[in-house]
Image (cartoon, rainbow, N blue to C red; front, side, top):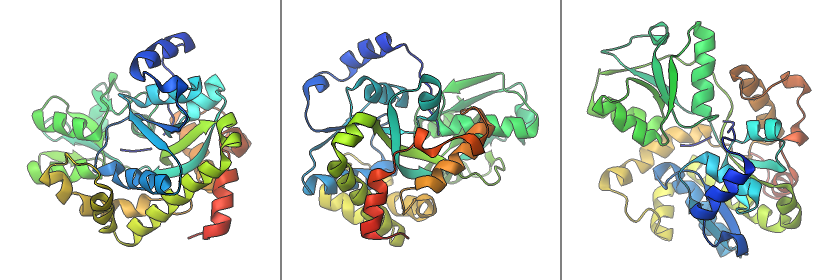
Length: 329
């Protein structure tokens, strides 16, 4: 799942109208309100467990799953949510929204893939349609970057939220070129061996998903933010050290109760592969500078990477305080 930069697609007035319908009752809520622009899946299991740990430490976390990351970002900007999950770089730079990223959750780990009956290599996608997660997402950034590197231009970019949805669309023949996560890659290899070709990507180092919040909220709720950050770091380090820990956490907190046997069986393989993309130090300044390099090349950010200031995009106060206590890895 997982995060890249997100662009606003609605005016402030439209956002407020949309959110009033999408998140009834949030305006008067007191708890830490987290807006997640996706559905709960195996890929988000460790984050859900970390949120439960924060609850155990006294933070009243309430998560609402929304239909897109755009709406989740709008919720944070409008004040109807406190924390969002995503990568709002374009929102920060182009809209100058009063929000800051305060922790990296994951690095990009995606696989461009095509139906071998239609395409064989990047050049074949010149003038063709592709599908990505959402406008301004890391998946879109990767596909645009690879188009630039390979001297091609897509005829259209379709937005299909959910890697599992895009994986299903590939298997059904409704999509012939897209980008999936590691779980989707394994499904395609298992269900239709040889039918799909994974295109070369090269080295990409950038944020996939991050946590961000309004600057005022970060200032007024630093202790709660620190508890949240520490809960996440603790969970990330456990899962990276032993992917089976994700299964134990699911059982302990009774997470994903509707998961199918196939989803449960995918937990350990997914986290075994994802372990390398889990930032055990929350990203910090190094992650921000990697993002500047990637997102300026892909077009989600404007300007020269060296001239972009970390403090214009990130607030490292809580993360640095937690790292001073837990140490770095």
